[in-house]
Length: 335
Image (tube, rainbow, N blue to C red; front, side, top):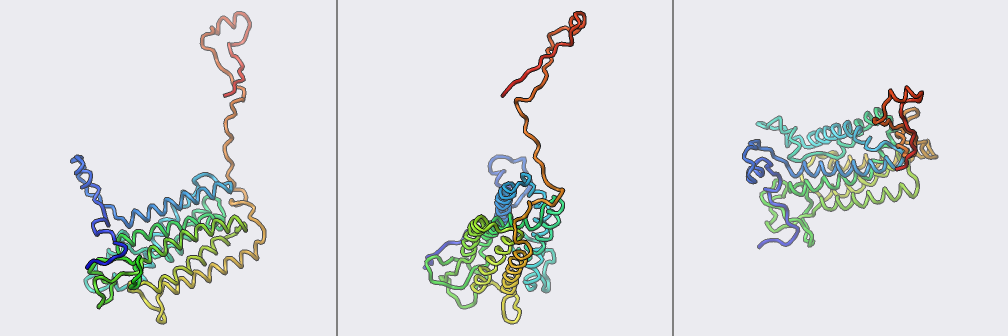
């Protein structure tokens, strides 16, 4: 009997061979087999949404449009590197065993980007990029916080397509159907067992968090990194709870999953930032730029400005003979 619940995407949807698809459309000259993984697509989509929202928030505070791209050139690679290193370090049995392919630690498209590692090294990259752009680091991460939650939520769709990081068995109507075999499923469970869709829970938690951060930031004018501190608290609380539902193997520290300790650390760091920055800077930020690094928009062309139009049909020699200046007419035109 087939279980009734949320179906998982078929395994063939996890990746698309663009080259084969183009050849089926008649483009036989395209011989390259270019494979795009669903996991990578959702990561990129999340980054795009985050950049769009962060840009809007930066511009609203007087920042240069799309200066966030300059910062992202540092933050995104650092974040991906940090996320991968943290994942590999907390799942060593998946990558270091007799006969293992060492280069699999670089196969990001297979899944395995830890958010806490991405925050750590991504923060380093964001600091470098913000300094080079002349923007205050805390002003940038405050603008980033809601978009970062949205990016993390969208990225969880990649886990759904990979059929990974699901939760404990459940008989709830929205239980997730997982294809067998799957190494994360405990021995002894029937083929009709459903599982908590933890990816969906985190997506919902992150979207609600993004809306809450935007509302709180506007209501209380949270600056100097305090909004980012709330982001860490919000995500840490949700992640700590969701980790208790997950079935995937994980390293334990004092009998507790490492990612729960990471969530606790995020909560404590967020609270510390919120309290310390609130005491150090009770007022509003003077602006998002460091002093002397402000962006000055180029003045728009005023259509009422005077300008000269040279009439090519007038003979300069004739004007010289009559003692008049070369034919120029002063025009005051409005567009």
